[in-house]
Image 1 (cartoon, rainbow, N blue to C red):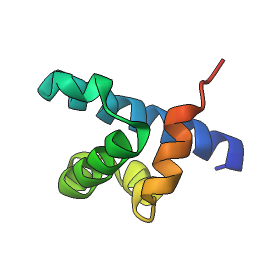
Image 2 (image 1 turned 135 degrees about the horizontal axis):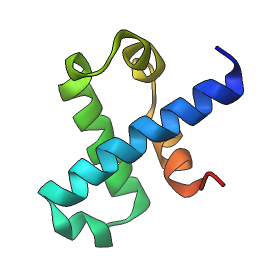
Image 3 (image 1 turned 45 degrees about the vertical axis):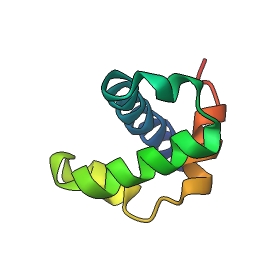
Image 4 (image 1 turned 30 degrees about the vertical axis):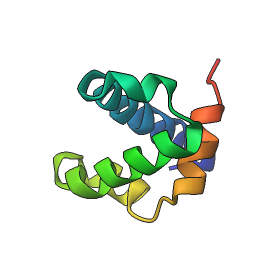
Length: 76
């Protein structure tokens, strides 16, 4: 897997968790990026077993700071 492909996949995983987070906790839409990143990081740790093996490998060592960066980056 190329670095670019891995980054795209990570972004898709984060987006999936972001949608789930804002559905479960609508007030998070107004939270800071760091708060959202912390919540997504927690969700990833709690729900890793629901991801494919490839996805688990991608997010296993993901930091809150990396999630924050991905939240601020928009794919074209």
